[in-house]
Image (cartoon, rainbow, N blue to C red; front, top):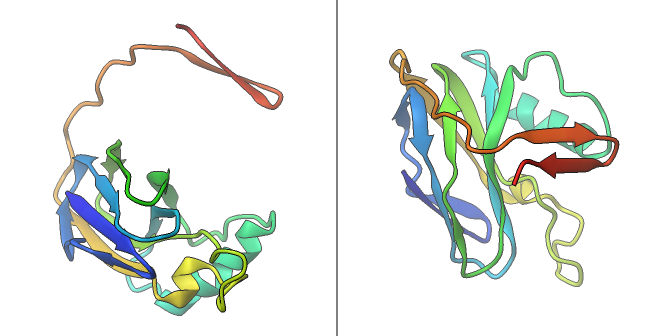
Length: 149
């Protein structure tokens, strides 16, 4: 799937996605950095519940119990793209850009999803594809990640 990010919207994001391993290309056609996080929530969760809970998370708060999973595309610079493969299990997701508007703009301090960069996606099917074998080992230590290569 290819998703285009601009100020402050996603385009190309389908209403429904097949469960399993999904290659998501995020193309940033905006002038600010953008990301696309897939937040899994129970079916019927209102958009307002997600919008209201994200600022607290951004300030070090815990994820609310209704958020079941989070995966996605890390920040992409303007004019660039990124293509991770993510594993989406069946269910209801909100896709958000959780970055702040650029300093010095009229919207500084507002998060991108608060400006409208939030969409809903239904993930359907079984998602029974196998994950690829890892090529490297990632070891987490206090404030550092070590890799095997």
